[in-house]
Length: 332
Image (cartoon, rainbow, N blue to C red):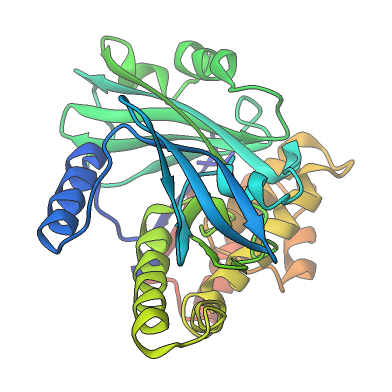
């Protein structure tokens, strides 16, 4: 939804998704890892380490009982946006424009307008990001907002969204909050080094997400599988760890590049002097993948047009590109 006026309905395959219970999924993966022979250190945390010739040769791991000293052959650093392993290797800090701050409530007794699709909102309330409603069932959903360029998690913006948004508020007016969630997502694209010494970076520690929306669950699983395969071949066949970067580039790397192009243009729009309502329009069309970033001339031709004319121009473009059966735009 753009400026509470233009509704985009995108049924493209890449936008099809499932809502998962993250805690249950993580536990399922842990069970499988343990059955396969992995040792799981529950409640442990890598706190420090020693390096020799660019490799981490000792890792200090804090558990609930003691400090373990591990001498790793390879480390798969999947330790999040503010990676401890990255700090040990002196990777430069990310700045606030590289990080998306997300806050949300899991809510029950909601009155969803759509129970079978994600709702995204691009408007004045959700500037420098977007608001969202992600259904979990017919009467429950994650309702939140994600923003870049902010110093702290945007709780005030979320509350304002819930209290005043003309489309969000009626859907959650009589709901209850059953879980509070927050997170940080690096959305700088493929700018971080994936392999350094004996470390492979995966997931948020490597900014492996669809950077125009911040979705990282599926990319992280894909990249994690590739990392595991490379580590196994490194141990068993002496394969170079740099093969990890090669395989990422040859597979999901192409999708990362496409998302980064969208992200870069959206960022330029958000930080421009354009009128706020036009910024919302352009970013909504780009992030929803209605118009690709290489169609800049088409995008900027929409400035100043009334909503009906915008719909006409965009609909003609969708027909021209033979995507009108998958994507529709209309005024509400």
